[in-house]
Length: 187
Length: 243
Image 1 (spheres, helix red, strand yellow):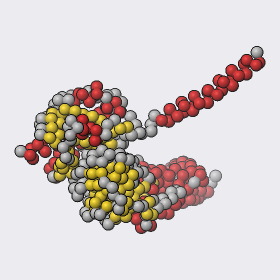
Image 2 (cartoon, helix red, strand yellow):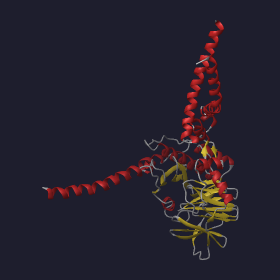
Image 3 (cartoon, each protein chain N blue to C red):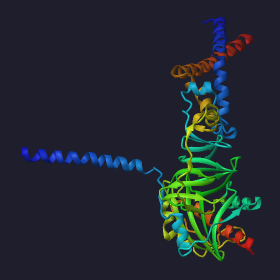
Image 4 (cartoon, rainbow over the protein chains, first blue to last red):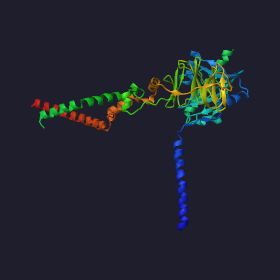
């Protein structure tokens, strides 16, 4: 009896410690913000323009444009210019907006003043990354900008990802607005 | 206890704790209006006070001198001449080409004016691929080194091309001079205490250590005694007048 029970006890002990360490690690890993790259900007642009992205163009922001951007985002916008890629009526924008603490990098393709594609490229927040899934991003397909600079359709939120959802909606409105003004300047 | 003795005790106690009571009342009134006075947003950086709290000045971080000033990291942020330009970021390097300061972080380049205004952000993958490991100048042209190779920019930073850049002068860090370090420390809220914390510690007595707490407790008790002895003396005088 003694010879059989001894090895059994030792075997259990050897597995308890790693298990505890694993649980301990998991408990502390929940809040660690990590950078997740779902698609590089380069690959997004290649997809958007059938592997032949046009040369980037630059939109220099006037005071009026900046004021409108700040109205859409709800905070100060620091950059003096924004780069974009345009081919005919299609344009691609790679924009960033902070969800809670860190910026989310999002790619947009706008075609004829409506959103054709929305893709979360890099997510750096500790939570709320559900916004990267197609079940959420496809809601934006076909969305246009109303006169009051809101989207012409409601976007269903995700429980626990409110700030990330808000960031995507704001940047979607921004992409549509920027597409509109760069289109106007060409006419 | 005779009337005169009680009066002397009341007066002595009042004088003894007057300063502490002023401190209690003054800090208490201010703390009552923390939000209106934005006490939690006001930072105090007096060297003596920071020393008292054991908050040490940071060691000089490796920084990058450019023609218009200094780019330096501190506590996870990046600063240009003491003004924060990036949060949660590691500094890779910085160079200046004409009127544009190029600050390299692992995943992006920040283009700044000499006044520190952000011109543009170029993410890795928007012209050059891979995480940035160095930034430099090659015959006046801005070059970056990434996991995918070395890339040179055009004068407008619109296109990047793979290059050899054998003669590139890569940005090298140097210790931040003391004057710039002092300016940087002033900009960093981690090297300060909030006015709310200071007032709370003065109010509770923690500012003066464990004995300070006991002293403030005694001041509170003394206030109670003063109120009691004051009411008693007043009642006694009134009673005598009526007789």
